[in-house]
Length: 147
Image (cartoon, rainbow, N blue to C red; front, side, top):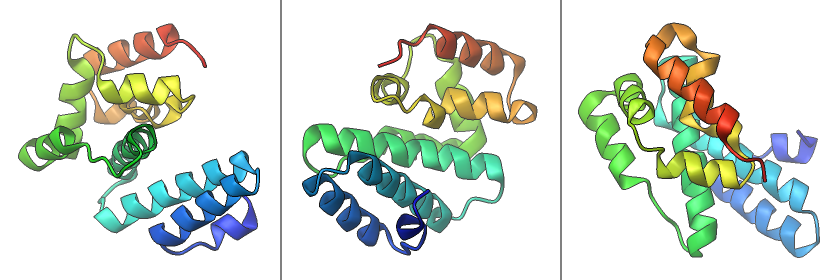
């Protein structure tokens, strides 16, 4: 990560940096700044474990992708509802084991951000999820097209 981006302390700073980087023709720096914003949001949310933090980063990354597509701030409201109702890990387990691929996975895969998808989080933390979730996650990531 660029040292200038590592020094950013607020989500607003990250958004401004990303906007300025794009205007000046540095899309790579803009992407890094957005990723830093995702990290800051997840840290502020108050995750108790590394796996919970990565799950939150996945949600915030999806919101960034959708916000960029829509041209306005977009929330993953149904995902947040599931997290409040079930808890972070059970909600992610439920989303990943559904028969249909989630909109979050599709959007992140299309943008080349599969590492932020819940499926990638599941594979990085196999002890926190069921064997079914691991198998489905592995299959989806293998089959997902690369941009």
